[in-house]
Image 1 (cartoon, rainbow, N blue to C red):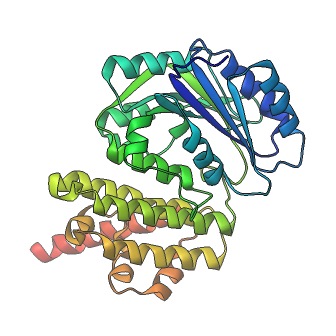
Image 2 (tube, one colour):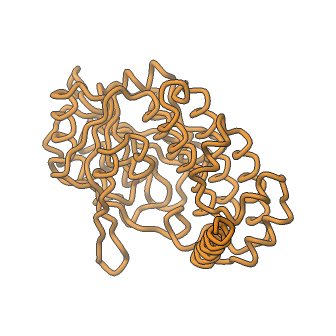
Length: 344
C-alpha cells in the first residue's frame, strides 16, 4: 500500500515506447528513495506500452496509470500528472530515458537540506552508438540561474512552488512546452541547488531541438515558446530589479531563434524566424541595452526597420551559422578599420 507520505511524484508521459519502457520504469522502481509515486500517462499508444504499464502497476502499487482515450500531447499528459500528484517534490522522466539508483534520494536530501525550490543533477546524453556526453550546464547555472534553460528533467521541483504559481505545461507550443515550464519554474524559484554526483540518462532522438534537423511544426512550436518565455520575463519585474540580468536573459532567449533557424532549411522556416526576431526585438523593455550585446550587428538594420524581406535574404545568403558568424566578424573588422581611419 502506498505510504501516506509521498516525498516525490514522478510524472512520465508515454507514447509508443515499448522498446525502452521496461528500463525506464525499472530505474524508477529501484530508486533508493522509496516514498514515491509514479504517475504514468499513456497518450493513446498504438504499441504494447499500455500493457507494459498495466503489468508493472500490478507488481508495484506506487505506479498509477492514466489512460488517454485519444491522442493528445506531452503537455496535456504532464498536466494530467500534475493535477493528481501528491508529492512534496515533483520529478519528470521521459519514457525512453532512465536514472541512477540514488538519483531521487540524492536530490531530495539536497532539497531538504537547502530548502531549495529546485535541485538539479547532471545529465548524460546517450547516443545510438553507445557513446555519451556530459555537459557542464551546472557550472553555468552557478553563475546565473537564468542559464538553466535545458536539461530540465535532471531536476526536481518543489510542488508548493509549482502549485501556488499555477505553473503548467502550455498546450499552445506542444513540441517545446518543457522549455516554457522550466522557464516559469526558474523565474519563481527562490533557491536552486545543484548536485554533480548522480545522473539522468537522456537518449538523443531525431527531430528534437538539440538534433540536426527539426520539422516545420517544431519550428512553429519552438518560436511560440520563445515568445511566451520573453513575455513572461517582461512581466516578471526582473527588469526593474536588475537591468543587466534582464537584458542578458532576454538576449540569450532571443538568440534561440538562430538555433531554430539553422535546424530547418525551408523558406517557410526562415520567414517565421525573421518575423519572430523582429517581433521579439520590439517587445524588449530596453532596446538600447539589447543593441549593445546583440550578437549579429550585420542584421540589426533589417530588424530595426522591420524588414522581413531583408532578413529573409540575409538568412538565405548566410545559410549556415558559421557563415553568419564569419560575415558578422568581417563586418565588425571593417567598421573598426574605417573608424580608426576616421579618427586619424
